[in-house]
View 1 (cartoon, rainbow, N blue to C red):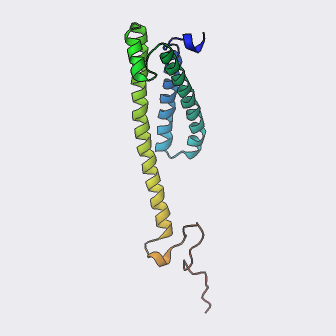
View 2 (view 1 turned 180 degrees about the vertical axis):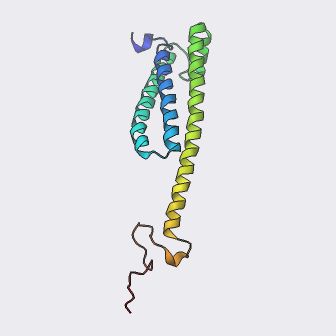
View 3 (view 1 turned 90 degrees about the horizontal axis):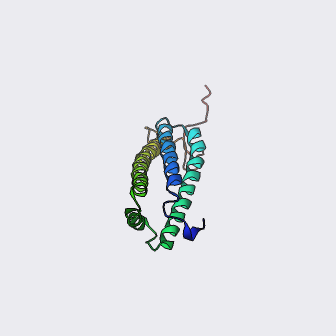
Length: 158
């Protein structure tokens, strides 16, 4: 089947499987963010990026099929196409839209968790740069090196 004769719904089963994978990976990501498991995040992030890239390629293929069928190459075009294509196409499209909304919400929550973690980390860095004793007592400078004027390294002999 060539791209120009492919039905716009050809990719729907694959897109549904991939969005389910993305949702699963995002739930795992959320747990890793909550537990601050950076090693787990390092492993999961490339897998998630790969699945998202595959979804993007399938969406592009679907948009090309829509254009070839005389519809606009976007979600509005797909909606118009499925409305004339029967219950199965409409059901699959609606399920994909629902799961995509779920993924957007998970992404929003995960983004909030990342922001919280970054804020916490920044607070720790700031505390190490300027302890309660004031700016003169800073242990580390912006470069991560010991700050000049930090804790004295002189010994008192007496």
